[in-house]
Image 1 (cartoon, rainbow, N blue to C red):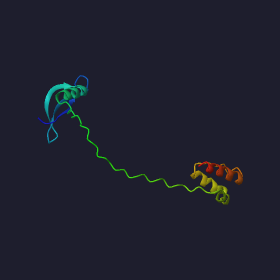
Image 2: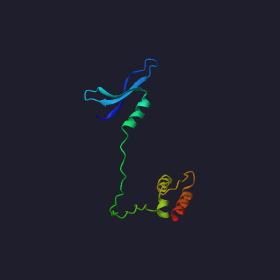
Image 3: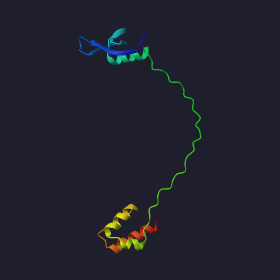
Image 4: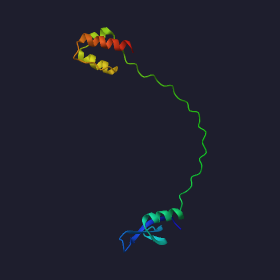
Length: 126
């Protein structure tokens, strides 16, 4: 007997609902009926599970893991911290972009001197 499957084999004449049976599929695509009971889809699937329970998985024995050699992590490249002199040489736009890369958002409405002081104070804490 081949692998059993649920297949639709017509409709109930009184309700028009599909009729399902259990059988094996042949190479030409037709089915050989093994269980002749006329059932709804849910009933047929339940019956199929009784006849052909899913394979029971064997208990997996934990495998001993080989000791893995882990390469040392490379340090992230350090972002160069500009000096106060370098900050003073930048335009307000350049200051804003530079400080974004360090995690500080500047308000360009402030004076350049105020922005440089704020940036220098922030970088001093890094």
